[in-house]
Length: 263
Image 1 (cartoon, rainbow, N blue to C red):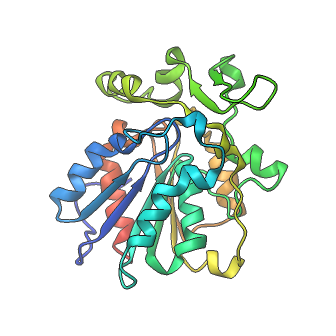
Image 2 (spheres, rainbow, N blue to C red):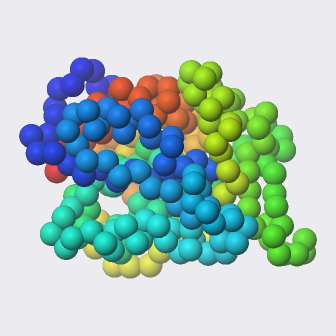
């Protein structure tokens, strides 16, 4: 765990923040404030159907459509600009796709309690390691079928009564209350994320994994399995729930700064 403000990078960075499922750019508000107060540039994106993005999650039928806002953002960056890409939870899938597509524009990728699989969901083991197993809580999901009931669901949401115990159990109650008003269903198409590319290229971007030890969503053992299978350059540990941007925002800020100081 980091303390204080030591280890600040001499050069100001551009941080691009990618939320996990159900969330939006809004979840980064505390970390965004801390980064911008330190003089850094911060871009917090809403993926398709998330946050204030106008798309209906039920209309998003491919991972590429869900990822389009990040793809467009990275495409528009000047060719000589590099960013620090930060992904939380399933946002790690978007970060990994960006590494495949825009590795030359990424100085560092930070995964926070995130799905970190070099090729997405290609195997049964990928599903075991990367998809949360919440069966211990019972029936936690609400499914919507935007096509016809015989087809797979088109969107998924975490039922309100389970949100705090799974996502925010160590976070301030006012933050989890606000989140419960803002969470949206997410496209089922996220489970179809698959990336193909040259392995040596995807390993050219430096990666840091921030592991959350009291995580009820992406369990610590799942995080450890992904770390073992695709070892990052560094692993940092936080004794937090799944949402350290709420439960330990200043500590998370310090770790992000520490990680980026080597860019």
